Length: 345
Ligand code: GYE
Image (cartoon, rainbow, N blue to C red; front, top):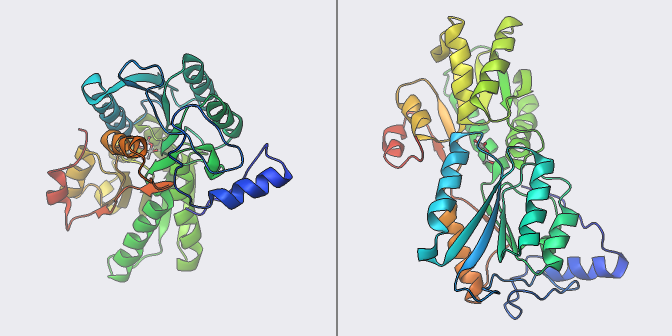
């Protein structure tokens, strides 16, 4: 994703110095837990600052809106346990971006030793990240990215959302080119939570590609990543009598909801090209059964992978500023095999 770097609250020379120093630089291992440098790149590393033998990780989670989210939460809850050297403090924002900012402030006030933030939306974070940094608490961004300067967080680990969108778009282009659809392409686009990078990246890929291929987007509306909203939006599209042959749904849960609505209206969903995102086990089964045509994968099992990054940082190893999950797509050619390792239920 090509986010422009922005630095807010830093003036003239300091801004110049921070941008100059932090371009892709590794973590400075010299100052574990507590010390802050405003002129150089980010130099906080997780440490057992209270000496209780465990690293306390505060997890500011988005909510519980989807199967992906449940799998993501489970992954953290099962990895960040005392047997692995951690204590987990879990904060559920219930998809509320304002509440989540307060959640992070509470984690800072509690003095957790590292924060893992999965941001609901990507704006308004600079002051809070500055507060975490000033408190000497290393902050990891996972799952969804932030449009902030690199010297405000330790590392990002998660999906390349625009990359996933491009995967889905390319699949559709190839499918059309292979002669699978001869008609005009009329797309219903169900978007995720507006302002989340998961929505912005997946939407951008489609918005960028559609005009060049003369694809029509006949509806574009948020279903907030939930099954119920996905169903509601599709019901209203059906009521409006819109003509469409493709559904581009930014997660599996909205896809389930959209299919529920089509079935209830007596419309054969198998006649639509259905494009989804994530790769929950039941969605992969639906690809096997021909209910969904393709899923652009997104990996929720981030707990152990972030644990690995923390261990590396604590051992003084260089860790990348941004690490994207390995993701592909699931269609009829590989769904049976993918089903064996699919996450969730
Ligand atoms: O695709 C969706 C969830 O941020 C990648 O959030 C995540 C998205 C995921 O609600 O199912």
